[in-house]
Length: 244
Image 1 (cartoon, rainbow, N blue to C red):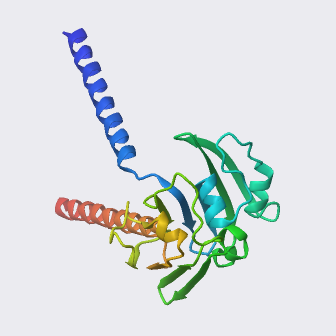
Image 2 (image 1 turned 180 degrees about the vertical axis):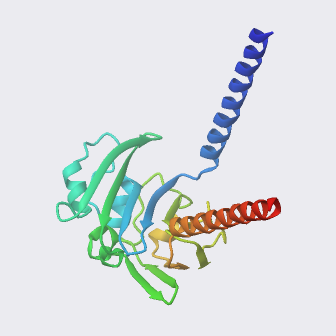
């Protein structure tokens, strides 16, 4: 009997793992692949981690990087690090391949996101971050690429460019084209590569609370604990009073 239960539990575990794996795979398949993506992890103090995920060709055409887009060409990591602001800034670089193309993943930590436009890869944007009472207002205007209209084969123009934001607090307003807030605090603006190459502007607007999600969670947890302790104290008082 015990061995039978163990077999059933084992089968159930395998089924659960398969379902979870299937869900993860399906999510990965549904996630679009971007030719170029800027990903910002923003903090309430204005500091940020900015990641760029891009094909070499996209960095060349959109941001003016001096790199050979040939997938067999050797990539100079030191040049890429300098292109993204090293050694004055903390920059990490990794390389990958997808569908026979070379990809670059670069990350930079900045103390003030509004100053990142001083770096060549982000010079096409103007950044604004202002606090108004209990809300932060953020706006980013993305202008023309480094070489407008430049196209490298085999692009069709339907490839995607994206700007994604992971925000530290609850979003109260945004103008993302999808109208969606992902996972509670993630916003995304996507644009066809052809429009980005032609310099069609991207207007990014959002507002979010001045108190972080973590702080709000801790406050709610604290209030719940206080209420629970108060209820317990009331029960104890009532029992003692009833006993007398």
